[in-house]
Amino acid sequence: MARLRPHRILLVRNDKLGDFMLAWPAFAVVKLSLPDTRIAALVPAYTEAMARLCPWIDDIVIDPGPGAGRSALHRALETFDADVLLTLFSTTRVGFAGWAIGISYRLAPATKFIQLFYNHRLRQRRSRSEKPEWEYNVDLVRRFLADHGIAEAPLPQPPYLRFPTGETVALKQTFCHDNGIDPRARLVLIHPGSGGSASNLSLEQFAALAAALRSPQPLHFVIGCGPGEDFKAETLAALLGPLPHTILRAGGMADYARHIACMDLFISGSTGPLHVAGALDVPTAAFYPRRRSATPLRWQTLNSPQRRLAFTPPDTAAESAMDAINVENAAAVIGRQFLSA
Image (tube, rainbow, N blue to C red; front, top):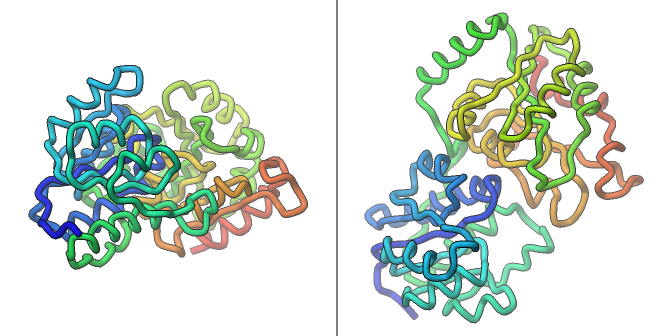
């Protein structure tokens, strides 16, 4: 069994934003266990900005994408010259590339044909959704550390993503001033987009939820707007009517993350920005389908347990019948948990 101390480790989580954010505990454990080892992340270009904010990533390797061909991915991996490949999300192209360029230790979930390209595998059965995705990721890191006889560092406590307090306070003051927001108001960010990754509430449900929220302090609703989501944001703004609201069109994901850090509450479906909010330990209220592959347990956010709520369709409704969620009841629970003080 390999016992040489690794010098350069490449962790792969090159799928969607939410998946990448849920890999941060894995990055933390490997870096804190091996503080002198160089850690790189293989990510697509659209999550690069968030990867640069991760304190446990030293280098970034950009995945050129399936359309670029095998040689392009091989060249990208060779730029880091890793001696360990930890693949948190398995694809044939990454497995083949790691094998082809001769990375000595290659670990991935045992996944059908793909596992042939890895000399170390961990059977996880993620499709059963028996625990959070971030734990599945950490389990792979633990296996790697055990294989090398390396003591495991404790898992950090939330938040996983931090901005300087003064920076966040200043940004919140500027945001409120520029948008004429009552400085006493609690900021409730609603992100109505989903990126097509999971079933979501309708815009009418989000509006009804907002109207039903109660707080002893004024509430101001901030509508998060990602690329291509202008129509949704503007439609929700119209549905909110007289409720105080502002559309937030942030300049890229890192800028959006800084604005999320200013919020008192983040509400959305199961989507990437939700997991950014979770990493920031911002209170979250999330709406999930009941499908096994998309449950609140599997896609649990990274914030503290008392700072997250999850809602799903009732057992009497279809797994993805988001219209069966009673948003007025959800608003009462959210209000008691996050807005009553």
